[in-house]
Image (cartoon, rainbow, N blue to C red; front, side):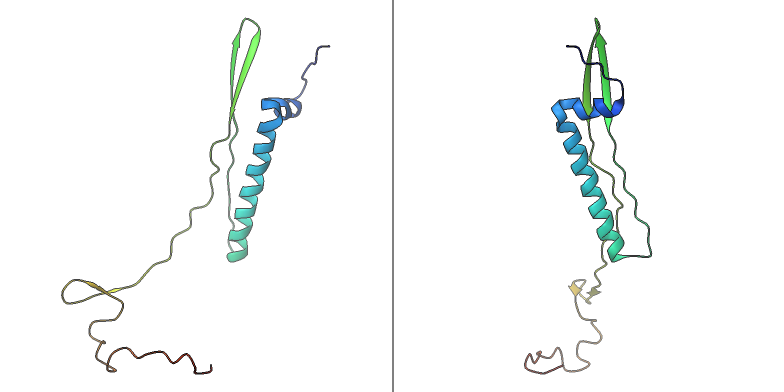
Length: 116
């Protein structure tokens, strides 16, 4: 019996024996989870993502080949945290300001027994 595909929803569900639909569902869930994490961390900002589905069609002698591709989703690129160091007189990196090193007799050991 011949099956006529009348709408794209049915077609998308059938492509790659349903594997394309499963992968697209996973991709949507992954993007939404990531956007939710970003939004939870910075609730005053709006975060956007983008998912693309590419379908390539080839027709020869009445037969149609459909190749699908889901490129990696686009997510907002967040700036990385800045690390601050100081230059010593010799041109090396230091975690302490070179002019303040001897200000208090150097770094002190942390007393872990002290209550806060």
